[in-house]
Image (tube, rainbow, N blue to C red):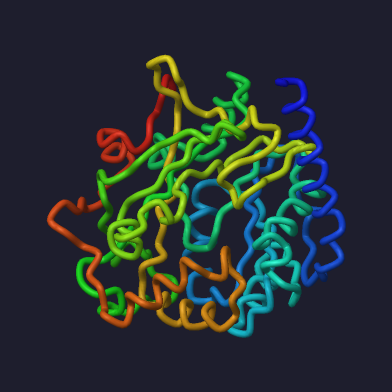
Length: 336
């Protein structure tokens, strides 16, 4: 039985890689600077649409961490995103107007770019509103983390998605281009999370936080997953299965300790709940390109008209990664 399950998962992985290979035809090169990528460069992979206002800070944040090159798929932006990205010397851009939904919500495109350009590199796959936080990120570049992971032969690194939000209505303080989003969205839930284990893929499944208690209060089991594995020492045989929630081979998903210990982990600070969100929700409600008929965006649309305040008396104000470790939301493990 175990051999049969392993065989089926291997076939599934090959199917996803074959999908990625076919979907490469969706992509048109706008700016290809991948020839500049060096063997030890750490790479960021992104799919986006109409995120122009977020891009200056996003790129600066990851450059400051030590990211060498960005590989980005622009899915039909009409707000100047692709033109802005094409002008950046450390960015390669592919464009497509193909269906985001039919490309498995962009993951077929990302799997292709990872297969083509990520092999042998540490790769970080994120959204434009996700900001990677890891132990000692305030004093050590990301290469210090990946060097340590290489030393101990750890090929994948997990990060819990931590929803950040302002105090007061989401639209009360307009977000300005280039601004640190956490100047506004500086609060988070320190608790209110559930964790289970996906038996098929062996990854953890985390839900909760402000989205569960505000937008999915009546159906918390349908709240978005918060578990991600964004940082991976990529091999061309790997494939993301569902966003960055899980991969194959499934050994990459086993980033936790089940015998009472504590493995290293990080967080992705999620800057979704800012003023650009309202226009984004309206756009995605028209496009209907997201998971399960845009169920998540339907929940947002229904609640945003009431101008909800995600802040509550249990909200914590963000200070640094050490605070997140004390709260048990991430861990430095045995990295000293």
